[in-house]
Length: 240
Ligand code: NDP
Image (cartoon, rainbow, N blue to C red):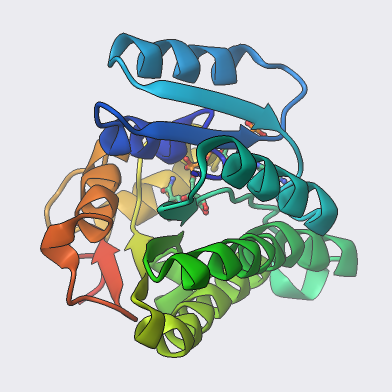
């Protein structure tokens, strides 16, 4: 299951995880279903079974119901990718409490709620893999993103704690911390901020959703079987 799989990095993760015989499930939040439908078509074209559902990742009841539905229908849950995320940027001194709390609610509380529900299933299975999508700004901060950077730093702490608590049950928990990736989220940034971010990338190019998705797929694969509690920065060297 991938949260926020309808577009951007989440869609690329759904596609990178799609292997014959597997079921890829994702959720999204926008009442306009067109992006979600496009993701389903792309998955079907790869020949995998898939489903998409609209609900708010920060609503614990809906999350629990959906994970119950997945387990009832398919019998198990092997992978959870906490990818859904939003920004509501403002300089810290001007940021409203609502702006701060909403971003924490979706990015951090939402991931916690999904992780908790999935962990119960994975612990029983004695296997499972979780990847949280954090951000480079969770490690280095960013002007105008007190809420977002806090949520992503929180995700890194959550990742390491969950990894320690679940390791003995053969459940691995890791995070990726993307840098500047070309999606609708970064397209919405002011042009000047976009240029400033790009200037910070040693590899000299913005990332693509697939650059992140391939690392997530690796973390979920058997090749990464001895890897847990790690935050892998996928940022073209922005953070090192
Ligand atoms: P997009 O804005 O392109 O996509 C966000 C996805 O999250 C959409 O599928 C959206 O669904 C879903 N979503 C948003 N709010 C909710 C919610 N409340 N409940 C369920 N789903 C929700 O973002 P990106 O692809 O750029 O980002 C994906 C992740 O990567 C985020 O966590 C982001 O913070 C992180 N990231 C991105 C970077 C970048 O440079 N782009 C850099 C570092 C981290 P819908 O459209 O239906 O609302």
